[in-house]
Structure formats: structure tokens, C-alpha cells
Image (cartoon, rainbow, N blue to C red; front, top):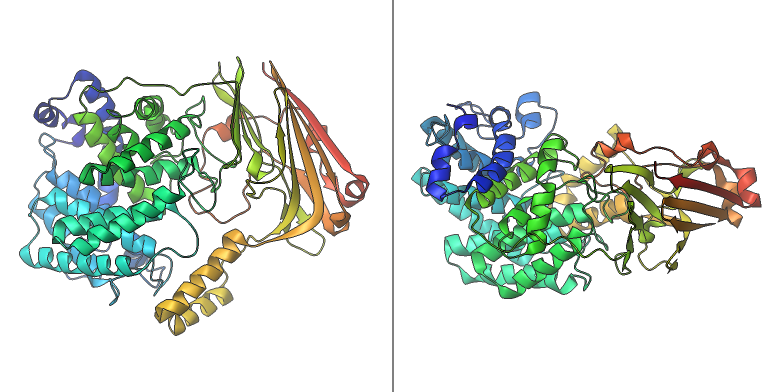
Length: 571
């Protein structure tokens, strides 16, 4: 019997209600669709030199020169299939599946660097993300298996987890503040503590957790590269919710409740979230934290229930949207969402967010306006990025990400850059935000760059300090590097009951450097692999407001002071 018929026995064991079964089935259906795919990603051949590897690009296609450790996170999903009594499932307690899973554990142990760390993006990366996330998910897989691993594999895993834990205790994320990475490190170390009994891992987990809580804004959001990003916050909140389940820390629960209150405001009417107005531009929805916390938080329950249909519709980026690099984190997240939805007991009722007409988060550089007919989201910190939703439809009717263009000497220029402290004016009927343009970097890999990178990786990059220097340089080039121009824009947004007006005025002495500027619905200006997944709203928004608003701005017009305006009226 397939997983499609496999729920009744698990429901009886959990005492599930009809409501629980309906909620859990949403996730089970998504999980069911991926089971065969995930097994195809695993090297199952017993005499293969890469037996147990889940990076199919490496072991099958042989297109990459090293295995990405994070693909081993798929073992958590496979261990769930092995351990969960879904009626007549071909995977439940399958000896063959267990053998394949054990091979995956052995492979993870085998690719660990001598210091205890793992690689994600390139060899000898000394990646905190790869070390934290894989340690967390293999620990969860180990818990699902309940001692079923062969003794030799079990001992090898525990030794590797201890080495990874010691590496995490000695190291930190230094190239930026990424709350979701730190949350995974905290949860991984807490697992290492529970499995090994070594108190140094519990102390290390507290270090990472306390760091996250100290940096949490009093507005409720967790720091992601200097700002708020609802998509990534749904991801990072899962590791914190799981840490809470394992540890019971009261201050963590209070932190999560504030986080959910913030996030609830950025669930769009069409059940999408986030995007270009956020710090990392992401639009992926990870549901587990909200299903896990639904008994404790009315906001979490509301988000879980409001966004559950998005798992199927993909109105927010989901399993059918993401690529291989986000497949396993999202798939595993659905596992925990399924378990939480199936086992939920009666708790607090869903509590939709309070909806004042204007909600301003100045530290995040975000503004939400609610009128009777629409919701408006403005990225003030991004120069006035706009997303306007018709609440009745419900759909995205207007999106504008700012200005982007070409320089005469080559290169790209844009006003879309995260500066939460930029000058803005927020009044009852009008919003104004000032900003300047930056020369932005959008590099891609080339054969020559690849040779230089690998040359460094295989020589100086083997040592941790040079490797950390390289990571900081790459992040600066891909995310932080900007060169301000003497070119400015002031955006005014006038609010009406039936829509909005957008007025832009561009001016500055740097106009002569510009070849062409355009304004467009959706674009980003920083590297972010988890951004720019397609969501259906991209097809529903329109370039309302007239062709004049979208007419390219050339240098001559810019020198004189260019103006663009449009009026968007809801149908």
C-alpha cells in the first residue's frame, strides 16, 4: 500500500480528530509526492565509492568536484518514512531502506573534515551552516530510528556528531548575522547534548540561542543580514520551536510569540508572503513552527490555518517551487508540520493580527497599510518597494521593486538597497521615502574565476583563518558591496480609498554615468540563492498606471530631473 492509503493507523495511534486528519493530510500528500524522488537522489549501490551520498549531481552526473554535505539532510525524511507506522507503507521498517539510510549516515561521517566541520559551497569551506544543519537533521533522523542503526554506524555517527559539536562550540558565523543559521547551530548542539550527555554542548547551544534573542528586534523580527525577512523567519522559527520542545526554555517561548505576532502582519491576502520589500527577498513558507506552536499561540494557529492551503496552491514558494538546495530543509519541515498537525490537542483559538489602518515598523523599514479594499506593503528600507493587494479578489494588483538600469561604462545601478534608517515620512494619506542609487555587483561564476577559487581552496583555504577571510570577501562581493552615486530619488505614495498614486522624482549630478533606467515589477540586487522562486502572483500583477510610468529614463532626461507617476485604481 502506498502512503496515500497510509494514514489511518497513525491517526488511531495519535488519537487524531477529523480536523487534525484534514490538516495532516495536506502535508502527508506533499511528503508522499517526494518519496520516490528522494530515494532516487540517494546512491544505493553497495560497492559504489559514493554509497550513501545524496548529492546526485556529484555521484550520478559527476558535474561537481565535491559532495555538498547538506544533501545528507534527506536522511531525516527517509528515517521518518522508515519509523512512522503509516498503514502498509512499503517504507515502514523496511530492512532495505534501513540499509540505505545507514549508508547515508556512514557517508556523512566520511565526508566530515578532520576538525569536525562540513562543506556546502566549495571544498574546505569550514561551513557553519553545513555543520549545523546536517548535525541537526541527522540527529533528528537518529531519533526517528530509535536504535535501529547497525552498531558500528551508530557509534560512528555519535563520534562524528561529537566532533561536529566541538567544532560548533569553537566557531561562530562571522560574515553576517543570519538568525536561521544560528538557530540551527543552537538546536544541533542541544541534540548533541541530549545524545552524548556532554554539558559543553548544552552551554554552546545557549550561546547561540542567547545571541539570537539579544538581536531580536523589539518589533518581533529575527535579524537576517541586517533586516527582517518573513520568508527566512518562517524557516528559522522552526529550529527555535524544536529547541523549545526539547528544552522548555520560557524566554524562547516568549521570543517566538513575539515573532509570530510580527509575521502574521506579512501574510498577504493571496497567501503569499515576503518578497522584494524584505531584507533577503525570499517568499518561501516553512509551516512547521506554526503547526508546532499552534496550541500556545493564537497568531501561530492563525498563520498555520491561513497558510495551509498554500502548501497545495504554491501561492507561497513551496515544495513544487524550490530547487535541490532547498528541497530537504523544506521537505523535513513538512515532516514536522505533519507530525504536529496530526497530534495537536485543543489549544488557543486562531487569532488574526490586529489590523490598524497603518502599521509602521521603523527598525525593519517596513510599512503595512490596510484600507477597506486593499492591503499595501511598502519596503521603506528598500527605497519604497510596493506590493498592493486587492483584498476581495484576493490577488496582487500592483508590484514595483524600484529602479534598475545600465551604466555607460558597463555595470548595473539601482536604488533598491536595504537601508532601514533612510529618511521617510509616514502620514495618514501619504508616504514619502528618499534614497540614492548604488552601483551594484551581480557577478556569476566563470571558468577563470572557478580556477582561482579552487586554487585557493586547495592551498591556503585548507586552513580555517584564510577560509574565513575568503567567505567574508565572497559575502562582501555578492551581498554587501555597493558604491553610492550622486543620483537620488524621492518616492511619494498617495493613499486613496480605491487605490494609490506613485510619484517619483529622480535627480543628481551622477546622471551622466547612466545609460538607461527602468522601473519594474520584480527584481533583486543582491545574491540570495533562496530568493526569486516563482510564485503565481508574478502572473497576476499588472503594469497599471499607463505606459509613461514604465518608459525608460535616458541620461538626458535624468540630467534635467526625471519624473514618473502612475495611478492604480482597484477594479
